[in-house]
Length: 373
Ligand SMILES: C[S@@+](CC[C@H](N)C(=O)[O-])C[C@H]1O[C@@H](n2cnc3c(N)ncnc32)[C@H](O)[C@@H]1O
Ligand code: SF4
Image 1 (cartoon, rainbow, N blue to C red):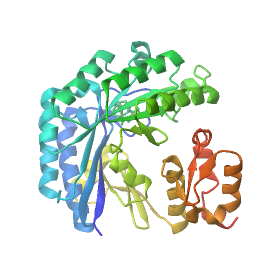
Image 2: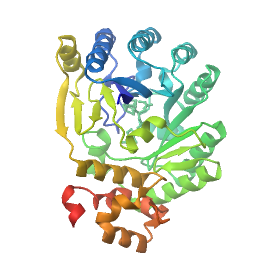
Image 3: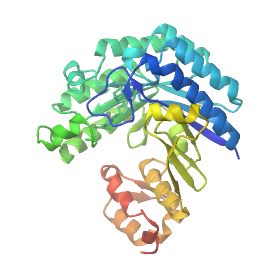
Image 4: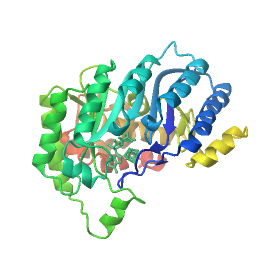
């Protein structure tokens, strides 16, 4: 069976945000061409090892749109030459509003990208400043219009809530403004204080604080507003108009095999999971000298894959098949009793109350030993 899902990591950003822990670095024009050649060489290398016929491609980062239009043209044309795209249905590329132009958007559309995911985070100028974003709200709105003008009819906007100093009214205004623009998909992430970020240090020093009840209020407001506006909350942080779910992410959550290219990218294929080195210089050096860029490899036993399927399934509105949960009957009964989950006899789904603590609930299904507990 060919691998059907391809991820490509572009680690460059116009400016580094103080809350972000993705592998990224400030754009450096001198390194980029070499990096693009490494990506295409890695695609050649991996295609020789695994049959590849993508249904979905996801360019993530970092900020893929930090590449210039000629660089994107070079990379995408190189990929088109190498890949069998006859089964492709979704090709997403992540953009930062500060790196969108009409020419770039038209070029991407012409080369086959049919879905854009843009990081807006907030429409509030004060909160954009707290987040250290490189763009203004007006620039984000203009970029959204340019994407539409270029013909993109499948657009996701990323938003964040529980930002330090954010009020309920500010979050409501951001949701309303987004709904008024009418993107097909919305990702609304609760801010997490990730280790090794400036925000985490401020959190540790007590300057920033986390309040789970406050986060829950903002989450409830998100569900209320977006559902009333016709967005289905098909995953805890993801909301889509009917038929506009992100197929690439759905494939991850359903446990499909995927191949990741680029520094720090993960791949999962059968019982193997591996990750490339999280260093673009080393990545390019290894690949361009004909070596692997492997940084980490593990064998996944079936119990681990089952735990992951359950944890991801619980985050989605499809839920998890009851048959998969049979070894944990007493845990499931408790979740049903406590109102964290409901069952229709075939599948178990989390309620709103359950979604608020989904990660904690999923922990009960982790690890092979739990299956016999
Ligand atoms: C790779 S970025 C999206 C594209 C582009 N780099 C940008 O920021 O505009 C992925 C998204 O993850 C979310 N994100 C990043 N760090 C986060 C954090 N610490 N907590 C919650 N969401 C976060 C943001 O919404 C961000 O847009
Ligand atoms: S949020 Fe986006 S733009 Fe900001 S550092 Fe992370 S990947 Fe780069």
